[in-house]
Length: 167
Image 1 (cartoon, rainbow, N blue to C red):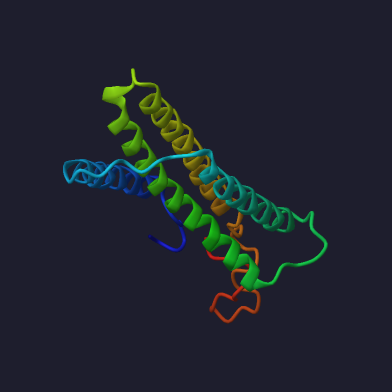
Image 2 (cartoon, one colour; image 1 turned 135 degrees about the vertical axis):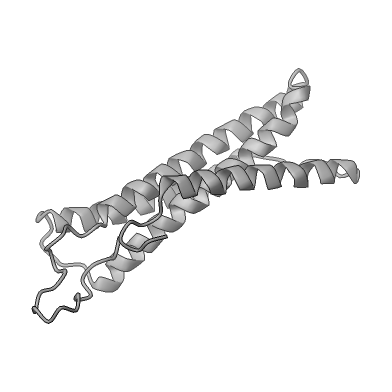
C-alpha cells in the first residue's frame, strides 16, 4: 500500500477472494470432522451496521472541514484515526464478504431444506452488509484525502507538515 494512494480496491478484492477460499476450506474441514456449520443470525448485522454508520459520519465530518464547511478544525490525530478506521473498514468488510459468501456457498447444495435455505439467505444478507461496509471504507478513505497544496508544506522548508491525514 502506497500511503499517497491508500488502500486500493484490487487489494480488497484479493482479500475477499482469499478469505472466501480459506473460509470454504475451513467449513469443509468442519463438516468432514463431523461438526456442524456455524449458525448465521441477524444479530451479527447490528455491530456491522453500527461500524458502517460510524465510519460514514466521522469521514463526512473530515470531508466537510476539508471543503471549508466545518467551523472547528479536527485534530490531526482524529483525521488520521478516521482514515485508518476507513481503511480498516474497507479491508475488514472485504474479508467478511469472503467469509459470508463461503458460508452461503456451503449451504447452496441443500437449499431445498428450509433450515439450509435460511442460512443461505442470512449468508447473502451478511455478505451484502459487509460489502456496504467495505464500500463505505473506500469512500471514507477518499473523503479524508487532503487536496494537493492544502497543508502539504505550509512553512516552505520542504518537509510536509503533519496535517489531517495521509491518504
